[in-house]
Length: 223
Image (cartoon, rainbow, N blue to C red):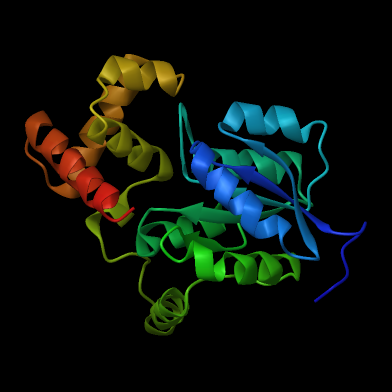
């Protein structure tokens, strides 16, 4: 692996769960070549901290309070192009891995495998590589070989913003709440809802809510 620029590689954590940040900090700081240089619980606090902290890699959760982790990845790629990005998430890798790669991340690791693989993932991304699970790597290669579009789930048909709206519907947020948190008009959120229903083959708003709640419950059960 290449040599750290100054003593140790500097890792910045973005996760809204304090216990996860604490566990990751303890794990990373035990390593002779890695150290946690800062942390944030939201997209806004991450952007603010990175104005004054120099980091080599940001480990970013996709589920952040009041914002989308995918949008944060895009912002970080534009503002700090030399900062390497690695996603650590509870979400289904098959649904999100290609999305985060397109958004600027160099890898995706699930929280279920984090304890055993996160250090390997960090080092691989720092060394200029891309980290995905062997299963996901095989799936992406197979898709390329077959010429298929990504994603087997109907949710893969949604844009990043539409997927964010589905997540928030699953949390029980109203159209107005979603509009406020995403800084959109109510009419725009309603348009997203209509597009989502059409893409997922849902008949009405009730089916959309039921689908979103069921999907979020399945994600939570896998945390």
